[in-house]
Length: 344
Ligand SMILES: NC(=O)c1ccc[n+]([C@@H]2O[C@H](COP(=O)([O-])OP(=O)(O)OC[C@H]3O[C@@H](n4cnc5c(N)ncnc54)[C@H](O)[C@@H]3O)[C@@H](O)[C@H]2O)c1
Ligand SMILES: [Zn+2]
Image (cartoon, rainbow, N blue to C red; front, top):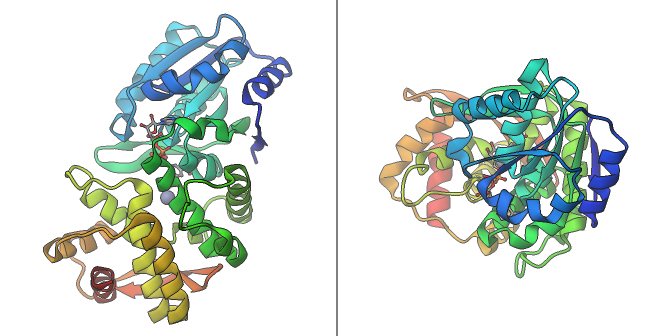
């Protein structure tokens, strides 16, 4: 498993990391935002002569076209197999830059420096790399581990509040699926002012523990999908609309619906459901969506238009802090959970 370095002095720590590792050439991949806001924080501590590539920020650029441009840059710069790549950015940069590095000349080493809360607590751990393809998320990719992941909360200072909150949804998820005490310590009011270092370390340790036990998602790792079957459907459905949801905003809706399903299917108590709802509503507020949209969103849960009579596989809570996987949920029950959310 990758080594994860938490740092309050990222520029110095990166400098000494690079001094202790040999490489033929250093390449830094950023998006247009992290080039402006994050690269200046480490630039002076990088060895002279490093080469940098920046792609346009945003999920819409996480595709093979951008990969082609990145591979072309690596080729133009004559990177050989001893080159080292630093991916400096959010989950898009880490997933795509890592994928390009892991496939260029059958793989060159790479270090990830995640700069969003989401990528620090989630995308930085677990070795999943890849890009979107023809509308399918993360459709093309590989499992490969970075040489190191360097995490510093200093980058969060420039992160827009809604992006910070999007990552916070994954933090809440980590508490819900694995550690009730952790969930209990998370703030709803004033959530944006927290000891992020402590939170990131705790969340990373939870994700790491789960991934270590089941790296290829044949069992336990599925609990990390809590809130995501329904959340992803919301994210996809409103993707190109003016009601566009960030990943964590969609997952927050998904966690409420799936907690409702947990009461029906896996023994979560009603009182804990209410605690979960309050936390998520206090942080994220309610997302209003018309009842007419429901059938299409439900269809997206299974990526199949003909849902009638079908069951879907869910990871559900048995109590706050405990999640189990492989529950069969019917389409009718998913409909009920959407109506439950709307009526809150
Ligand atoms: N590999 C995994 O296990 C895994 C897990 C979760 C998510 N992901 C992937 O991660 C992606 C989402 O990650 P994300 O939310 O970090 O998206 P992102 O990389 O697009 O970053 C979100 C926005 O924040 C900007 N940004 C990044 N760092 C900043 C900073 N320090 N200051 C100001 N702005 C900054 C970016 O330019 C972008 O506009 C998705 O593609 C998702 O599939 C992967
Ligand atoms: Zn997620």
